[in-house]
Amino acid sequence: MSAAADVALDEAIATLRPSEYTGALIQVLRAAPRRIEGASVLEIGSGSGVVLAAVGELGAASLCGVDIEREAVIMGARLLDRLGHGDVAQFHLGDMWQPVKGRRFDLVVANLPHFPMTHGRFAGRRPSWSRGGVDGRRLLDPFLQGLARHLLPGGRAVIAHNGFVGLEESRAILRPHGLALTVVSTVLVHIPTAKVELMTGDILEAEDGRSIHRYGPYVFADMHVVEIAASDDPD
Ligand SMILES: C[S@@+](CC[C@H](N)C(=O)[O-])C[C@H]1O[C@@H](n2cnc3c(N)ncnc32)[C@H](O)[C@@H]1O
Image (cartoon, rainbow, N blue to C red; front, side):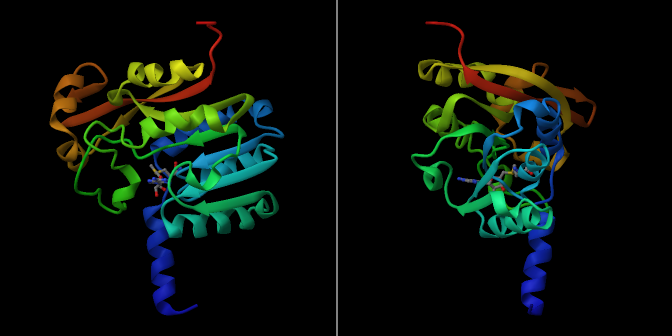
C-alpha cells in the first residue's frame, strides 16, 4: 500500500472512531441477545462498522451497512472480515434508504448525525458525522418516514435519539405508519464547549433545564436509545 493510502486509512480510522452514542446503542442491543440471534440487520450510517460487528457477535444472520462516506464502507467491510463476519456482511455507499430500496429487515439500527448545527465541524470528525441541520432533524425525519417500508413483519428499529431534538416530534412522524417509539435507555452525555458553540442557539436556550443540564461551564444532555416497533394501539 502507498504512503498516501496509509495516511488516508489512518485518518479514516481516527475520524470514524466510536463515540459515547455508539457505546450506548451497543449496550442496549447486547442487553437482549435473543432478539438479535438469526435476525437480518441493517445499519444506516454504519461508520466504523462496530455496531454491526456487535450484532454479528450476537448471532445476527445477515449484516448490511449503508454510509455516505467511502472510507466508512471500506473500513466497515474490513472490520467485519477481520472479525469473521465477512460472509454475512455487505456494505453500500449511498444516501440513507436509497441503497436498500425495496428491501426489508428484522432490525434497523442507526446513530444518525442529528446534532442541531448548520455549519462548522467538530475536531477530528468529518462534517457528515454529526451535522443534523438547524433543528437536528435533517436525516432523522427521512429516516423515520422511510422506516416502515424497510421493516419485516414484527421488525423493529433501535436508534440513538438526542433528547433536544424532540421525542414527541418523532412519535408524531411514526404514528401514521403504525409505529410507536419507546425510550429504552437514557445516558447523560457531556457536550464539549466547542460543540455547544456550534449548536443552534434557539434549541440550546429552549432545552436548557429540560434535556440540557449546565453546571457552570460544563454542559450535559440527555441522549436516549429508543426502540421503534409496531404500535399496539389500533388507532
Ligand atoms: C454519528 S456517526 C455514527 C457512526 C456509527 N454508526 C457509530 O455509531 O459509531 C453517523 C454516520 O452516518 C453517516 N452518514 C451521514 N450522512 C449520511 C447519509 N445521508 N446516509 C448514510 N449515512 C450517512 C456518517 O458518515 C457517519 O458514519
